[in-house]
Length: 301
Image (cartoon, rainbow, N blue to C red):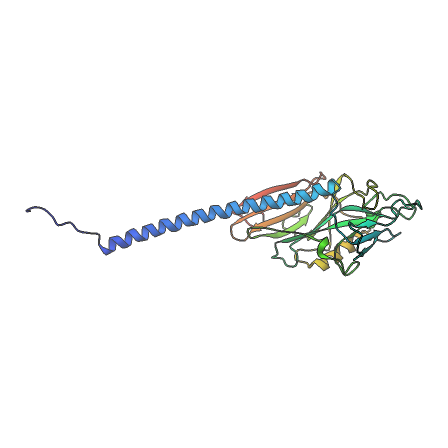
């Protein structure tokens, strides 16, 4: 028909433009979804970590003692308790002669948990913790009244005291979604250039509550002690030895207990530009685990 134009399709150039625009929109949408998933994963992982640390603190406060098996704990005068492993048939770990017929205090008491961060490597996501036990009585047959007088040590494999202990005594937690410990220090040290550490002890004052054959435990006021001469990335054996070496004998100036500024642990995401700062205690307060999240910033700054 006169005056009608023959319909035409898209040119190759127009098709290419449409495909390119569609591809860019798809990539943008995928990146947006991926970024949102990473942010959600980070938030979930950092909150789980905070919850785990708070749970450890709560267990120490409430006197919870894990039911390990096949070992005994015997008090020593002027030395840490003697702990024997591989004692078959004993069931839960027991004390020897706790307030026995001799009237001598010769048992052990549960004192808390020692927590190690970035186990084995500075890039490690592993966190381990070990029970801390001590003598129930002193050389005068009186109940011990302080952490240092209890001569504490760890229920853990180590070269100094218990090289053959089972891994049963170690509890482990792994940070999720690619999170790692960036730095750790005490006293509000910021980037930890001066007061860097790799472990902290959640502890209570000794108590004589409990009885029978089990290690004593009971609800107590919580203290937290940064362990000097430790660092992130230490092996389990070296860390256990370092903690035991710091706890007994205590430093001449005494333990650093509940430092102002608290113990700070910076956790960063290796896939997104985010980090979170967990602060245990601070300003001589009870050690609640507080969390501050940094968006678009690593190293908690």
